[in-house]
Image (cartoon, rainbow over all chains, first blue to last red; front, side):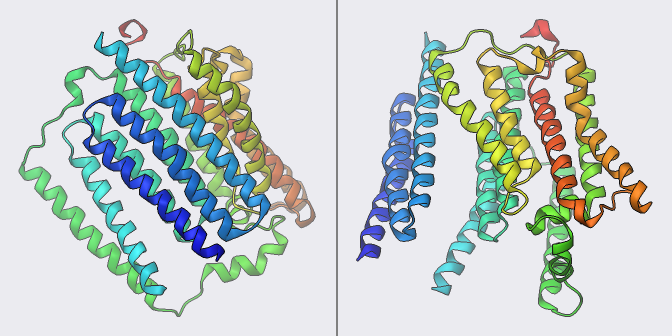
Length: 92
Length: 309
């Protein structure tokens, strides 16, 4: 049962990864592409890590996964802001 | 299950080759460098898949992270015209491609026949047999810092020579002055995490995957984040501290290797009961040297001299 839930979560996370990659390739503007990529950071990675934690079953592993997710989200958000800032300064 | 695993391995290998070829074949460096960084990350994934976590951490931190960052910094120095280069067919290029292909076939055959023939001693058996005497329980650290310590000493000497070469171009270039508020807020959180993680990876290198090179790369990333925020540690510590911090890896190694000669009259043969402590001392000094060497590489002056930026 747990494996079914974990598999569903991991597949949904993978779906977000695919959507983000398609967005990176197909969206017209830099800011739209950054928007797609940060969705990958948040939901894609989060769902995948929750699924893997369910499969592993240990609290320590869950805490490490939570720390990894927080770090990726924070650095992804800051990087997206810096890239968008640079781009807006370039185009003015 | 095994068929799916083999399929994953084949897909990883194929994507790795495709990334390597495309990183070399794209028309501009601005596209080639992110492809190289992706190549490094995928290679780290493959190392983890091959059950070599030390190599995976080192590849992700140094190969993809720091080398990619260095390439990006050097890309900024090139004039815009150099960002795009033409892919031309010429006799020399075809010859080099052909020779590379032949070498690849030869190496693949040699590697394959070496794996297939199971006779002959495997070094892993010798390492496992002597591991209790080495002072650590991680076989990678035992090989790097005890059984083949001389090679690691030479690696640190090469790193020192590289930093001296970088510094011979000019004094370290000051980093950007004021920082974006997002970047300074981010580094308020990231730098302490990096310092603690680097210390943990160094300490845990004795028993679990980790070690001096990985910890040095993580701490160098912390120094680089500080530099991007306007606190340039590389320039701020003064000349004497700079010399000590860059050379302490090689000097510490030589001192320890020479000091154990008083016991056994062989260079770098640690006495068995002291081996763990000596390895820790060498690793701490090596981490400091690697950290400051990599941070110095980022502070290198631009190509046209300081006035050209």
